[in-house]
Image 1 (cartoon, rainbow, N blue to C red):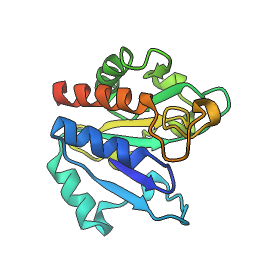
Image 2 (image 1 turned 120 degrees about the horizontal axis):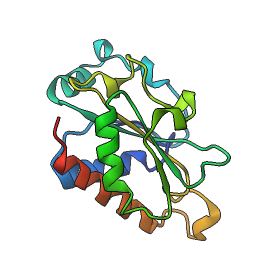
Image 3 (image 1 turned 45 degrees about the vertical axis):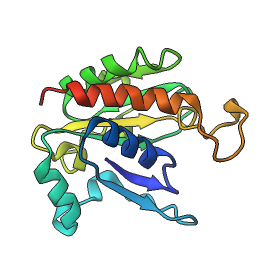
Image 4 (image 1 turned 30 degrees about the horizontal axis):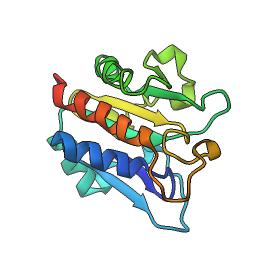
Length: 174
């Protein structure tokens, strides 16, 4: 899932789309067009008002939502929140070898409260066996001067992230 994709939490929809395609997983995205940056809190995405979201949630056992965040002190940190803690640990085990230059936090008390993604109305937690909310810093999405790249150039860590997510999705036991 990536419900803050497009122009809001840039590159999250690309990551979710490619990981879902590579793993044969279902996908739900919301992409804001260029010029729109409207942050709707996750717990405001209501399947009662979106037949596509309701259909997605009825279809999947677990969910992984890809989000973006930026916070001082977390430039190389991925946060794995959500209610399915077993799945968070599973995903973390697959991400760590692919992303050795990043810290992967999958213990809730290590994650800042507003970024934990544990609200019961958060769509990632509405799947049958809940899910994991992954918060990605701008650097891994290629959105910082760190990479010294031209706008629109894909950074290598995106592919490593997608590989880790794909491997986790292919081996998950709901």
